[in-house]
Length: 479
Image 1 (cartoon, rainbow, N blue to C red):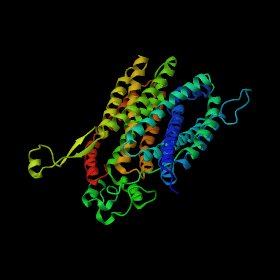
Image 2: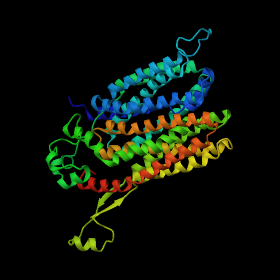
Image 3: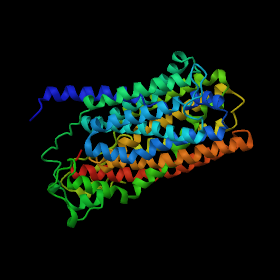
Image 4: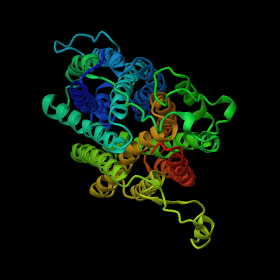
């Protein structure tokens, strides 16, 4: 049965609004440095034990990214979102049981850091599952022209979510009632994410008949963009289509391209370094400044995602065909540096990624020598670094969906996020372990800065690849 166009638009609007609400509920991992010291003090843990719990939350988040992305591609976001609610309810409720009750009775769950790692791992799983189930339907619904803006705005709400969590914990639970805080979140998250069953809808855009079928594409254009030969060309398949031959081919082919693994490594190195700063910002400053440090990072995180999404959408990088005179050879001969009848306009998203990585490296390097000396300087530099981190978080999904296809975006983005997960877990625990051994953050911050600098160097490799893809895409008639 065909759904009326008006109903489709309303359901797309509902999906977007629900996506914003869902993103606002994903911020507990970002607010870790605010409420974690309360847990550390009550349970008597070391910094390494606390950082291991935080690392396990991030591990659950990123390790689930592939499976949740595959589930969203296969079943749709509306059927995956309730699973996030179940993960959140189980994790938060078990975390709350480790605290003594008001009557002072023995808690039913021991305050063991290893158990807490398992509970927080479930919370991380819920965050990633809800993220993918909310993001992918909106990216597909609103199409390529609005992709960067949609991603940026949704992730802006994700960036603001940590501020909401901090306000809730401080003013709703006195900044110390961790048990009540976790109990509330267990039921609240279950209700919000279970409602995704009614609020998330996916409507893939219909392909233009003169542009999308691969029969109309030259073999050279196919090989140039995808490395695809005429023998395995699924010429009669639609570009979009759940479970179609082309979708399955896209899933496999992206993992054989070097550019995909460069993105993986940039996430592993540069973005994971920023997550370490986010997890420790509350410990870099005095307790009186902890609240403002987390709030500032939340605001700048959201601002970076929204602004870079708007900029990338307004100044999209593309190859524009030129008006060729009767003698194209003579035209090219009189145009130095022009090797094809196209000019490139807009801003390369890969260059923006490198700029953001460069800002992060500069901020980390300066923070290394200011921690313990100037809380305000640490707050400002940390906020700028997290702003760049948020901007990159808006750029990566847009790049992945454009370069490797929307039909399997959940799988591709999920696998790329594994790099971030591995980096956060290893680096986060290393920073906590070194702090316990050395009693300061000088050496851990030097290591974090060096890791981020490696990510910056790798991101430069993507510049020429984006230019090549922009040319191939216009030759194929997709834009």
